Amino acid sequence: MRKALRWLLALTVLIGTLSTAGAATAAEPGPADIKDRLLSVPGMSLIQEKPYSGYRYFVLNYTQPVDHRHPSKGTFQQRITVLHKDVSRPTVFYTGGYNVSTTPSRREPTQIVDGNQVSMEYRFFTPSRPDPADWTKLDIWQAASDQHRIFKALKKIYSKNWVSTGGSKGGMTATYYERFYPRDMDGVVAYVAPNDVVNDEDSAYDRFFAKVGTKECRDRLNAVQREALVRREPLEKKYEAYAAENGYTFTTVGSLDKAFEAVVLDYVWGFWQYALIADCDEDELIPPDAKAATDDQIWASIDTISGFSFYTDQGLEPYTPYFYQAATQLGAPDIHFPHIEKKYIRYGYQPPRNFVPRAIPTRFQPNAMRDVDSWVRHNARHMLYVYGQNDPWGSERFRVDKGAKDSYVFTAPGLNHGANVAGLVPDQKAFATARILEWAGVPPTTVAEAKPLAKFDVKLDAQDAERELTLRP
Image (cartoon, rainbow, N blue to C red; front, side, top):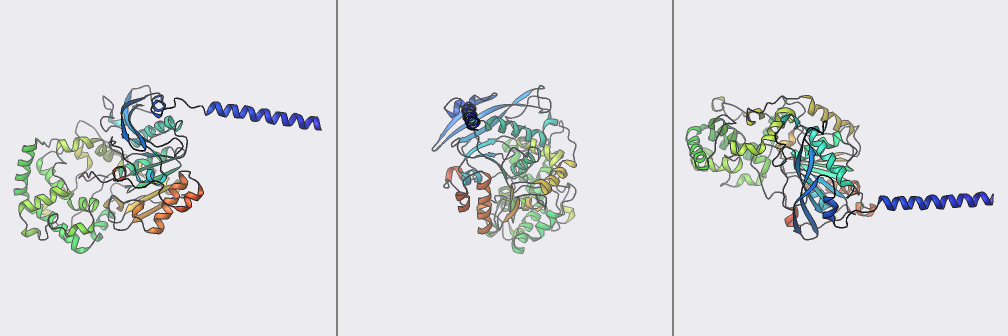
């Protein structure tokens, strides 16, 4: 018996020694410097390193297949950025669903968990566009597969928990990524993410605009919007001069007249997307008496909120990938204007196909969003959605049903398209913060405190420094 016990003890020690040796081998770091470790990833190259106190910040290119189903059929360079804190910290995976910013910034979950942040430029937004561009390879599965490959490549360096996040189209992107690769992330925080399940059924938006804010504010905005169409002739003359002065053209949308109406019909939506109800009282922004206002006052109000440059060829071109996706998979809102007589509206809300160059074919796939919606409602796990009470894009939103686990949908009172966890009512704010911390894998005592782990940094954490005047998520 003693001999057997000695043998067993020796075997246990031997196994432990081998296990330790194996673990040591597996944990052997590559190059010590984080830049060298990042550049040791196959396909990764450095564009620029920018200094920021307390962090290392890298702008990088990562080689991706154009078609993840057929990787041999060409590659392209996708821009990503890495805000490096420490490999011992959690990592937040962020995308806005458009171009990536190359200025150091930190999204709310990154501040909450005091972690690293990897940010991805969405495929087909320049310069992350294949050449030649096969637009059929721009879909939600291909983009999710981009994220999956980046995650697999960087998880070897950032081995702690990962949480994905994004706002608006970025929140949609984080959702699609979770739908197709549900084992990658430890949690998802999706802000103001639209969910257009049935593209032809948009009555939720009409109900929203009938009740949002106060009647006084709605009436004031509606009057300015209507007046702009009543004064179509003089305002379009201003538009012609404005376009000539700036070299703007209208080939994609078809005409200056179509572009003018598109800008004007964006006006009320744009106000509620970007402004707060208190802004309704600013006379310089919203003329209090539209009929008595000058043409210049009506023009200035529409231009400030909607932006007359957007539906020009030059304004649309950077967003061709978004409008292509809206025309093929994402869908787009369509609303009515009961406060404007039909004789003043020639085109109504134009479909996204009108904002994609004719040389790029589109075909709508109605099952794409239905599939995602069903998956979220029945299979969501560790997912948090935050919407703004006064944001039009929240009219059609994601929901979680009984099949979902540890997943939530919250609404920030009075907020717009910039709604965040900090804007929730106190109980929900604390709860949401605690869930994010737990998903990030921080100690239970820290989770219980339910507070962001990093102090607010004005330069890193100010998210709305750049407002883009478009009717898009």
